Length: 514
Ligand code: UTP
Ligand code: MN
Image (cartoon, helix red, strand yellow):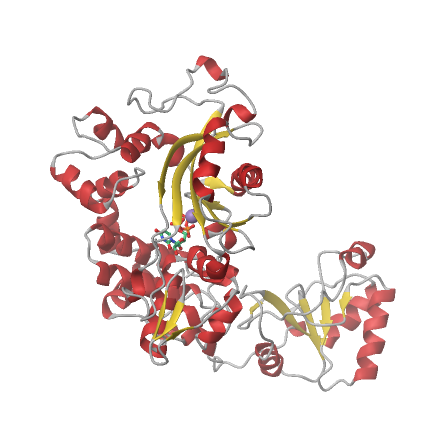
């Protein structure tokens, strides 16, 4: 198998699902390269393959598993592949094969097992490992897929980033995160330090960690951080809903190490933290996509009840294609500007009367567009009408609370945990699960900005704002884009338009996983 250094092609599926099912060999998709072969010979070979029950694709796409060429060197085919562009980056592997494999397979009527003599040879001088698009220095200029080839390295760098964040060293935290992000864009696993040549965003410290990991399989600094009492405690404490770094740090100094220490302590907790401790066991579990969808239905129902015609959109990590999340994020708007005003309290009230909410705190919309441009350029991110909440999601039906059944259910003799009940963390499984939900209401005119701002990832957002400020003299927020040179707001109703105002190639949500 030859790892392909390329981006995917957007094209119609070469062979339809029914075609593939109709063939005798549904696991493979063959593509015959016309280059140096000519159209008529290719047409003949395509037809021959299909009559023998082989799935042969008319156009090249990422579904192709076997690329067959005649009179081409491996390097030539590789170079051709690299010209294929666009779409989401999912690095693939496909066999690069000589026509002899195909003709032999035709003769036997079976895909022949691949021998060395069938394989197109790549020359030893490696073609550049890094496609140009990966080497751009802002994460918002690059495609960062969810799945990538350097998980061990990125996990290590992200742990150091997290540790720096817990120590309130933002600069250091961002530096490690940027280093991890660049590794996520690479088309293959880093094996030697030379593979990193020419890549931006890799500072001395990150390089040192990577080098150590490549040589010894792990990094001392990473492992000692991972096992340090301070890192573990601050991570556990900030893992409680409503607890930030400052509070966690204070509690740590006071001897607290984990949520149950907090529950037993005399600390005065605000209402968010109380809910955080009470529902900690559920909230520390990942939320699945199915659970997110179930919550989406509840929110949809609530919104339609109180304002028909309003639209809800799933944002955050789930919109980027993640299979799980720590919460579920929704953006709500209405196509008639102004109709969305006052929507949140009504939605909350409806949800409350249905018994769906275990906790909620709503903040009002405080965004005001000033003629002179945004007052605090890069950081006015949180001025929407917004509700931080904890939903009570029925485990069996995916419905919320008593919409489906009585609170607590009758599972295993476990008492239902009512909101506001004693500060005893949950210990047994109930018929429902507490799930964090973020609701945001945006006026229609700001919807594109809100969608872009709430889709993340956090680093991608940070990089977008940095790009806007540094490279374009613009200020981007989840509400608006202001051009400081022209002294005017740049309007946009879609994410595509915003990327275009910023002079950036459009990056789809699935490739914003920086
Ligand atoms: P999340 O914290 O929910 O991150 O914020 P996520 O990417 O969905 O990750 P998981 O899966 O829940 O862990 C979603 C996006 O909303 C924006 C950020 O840009 C973030 O990427 N956001 C979040 C804000 O703009 N302001 C906030 O206060 C919080
Ligand atoms: Mn989220």
